[in-house]
Length: 420
Image (cartoon, rainbow, N blue to C red; front, side, top):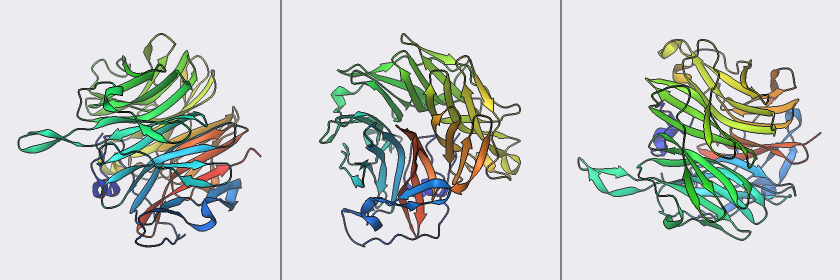
């Protein structure tokens, strides 16, 4: 699919499938100092504010005063109560990587490398300890060659590592050699210091990379079961249950139809797994996956029905794995009405599970939905903006990160829900 939205068109060329959805203005306004070329905290110095509706708390995050837009795409937490959120910020049309750290009391911005100094973004993060975390994304550039007099895009995968003191980008010799013009990593899942996975796409073909403790290498990617003649594919989410049990979710496309994608690692090889879709589905995609136990996983995204144009409607899609097979689970419609080309209004972009009867999902509609062990229900509480990533907190909490439109700028947010 090649959707175009207002935000994406005025930002820059972004990797396919990661087009940004238009944000809805909110009434809350956070004032920032003008003309400051450094990060600064807004109200409360980045600490959690009081409880929001529905038991959710909103954190006021540090941001760049001169930034036109700041996005947070992913988050991960450690058992000691600390965690990370990663994304990008933009001032003047060039995106730069961004990382924010929660030390248990407040959020602070931590510098991250931008290897080429062009458009760089971080889409995924996975933390093992206070001295061992991975973040992945893409590093955009322009090749020296050209085709028909036009510059050729030359993106490379971006992998950065936290050693307890600094984020460091892997140098090109330490990255897998990929002969592709469009490369992006959207997800990362670390199992141990010597075992981690990253996934995304290269020239619109699914890409999986593996860390063995010494180097990253490309892992064979099996053709999706949705089509015998794959046209394109991409991975957006990873869940590492164990060293012999890893899941990847995304989408594949053939003959102008996008289908949801499931891949599984059994300790020896990746294999394609049939991804179910509701009857009458036009297009379908899975954006995120969470693991509660080896026999209890959830994946979320969206699917469409109807013809093209105004007759095409989008719906939230949730799928559950019970240890034997994946099954579609009925999900409430978040934003009824026609949604051309999916419209993203009902797309679920993130999911996090605290227990078998306690799972949350959210997306671009600002609505949160909850699984109580029997059904999904729409929550009365709403996120302050568009949720891009979620993670469960050891001990029973949930974090959700994303961005919201405040005046003429797009600013990051984090909302949390405690175990109680």
